[in-house]
Image 1: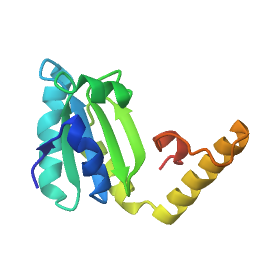
Image 2: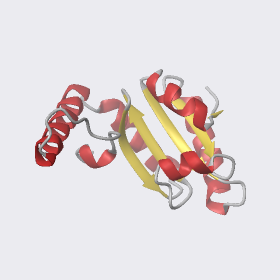
Image 3: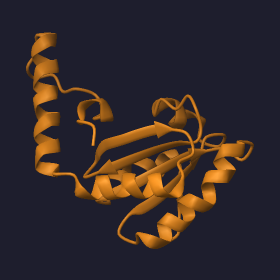
Length: 144
């Protein structure tokens, strides 16, 4: 499967509609982004069960800001709608494969339980147990 360019309008539906989604935040003027692109594209061909999305941070400045992108390229990995990995910098092919393998190997029951506990603790700390927390992010997921 080839990489797919997504916009802010497509971002949520892409994450929600697929089991595993990797997102490369990049820009045309970024040298490391251009170096990472062939590695990312090659990985997309090796893993047809994973969606490899690309977000042009110049065209999608609001989405990049909402995602907290401060350095590019930044790679994010989502599994079952949960952000489980986020790291700036161009990864070498072997390290990208390690990330993909680790995301595929995650025990998602454990991850969802961890997220639920974190949300409950945050709500209790806020003194409002009916409050829902914001987006699930990698800070809630144990390192893999």
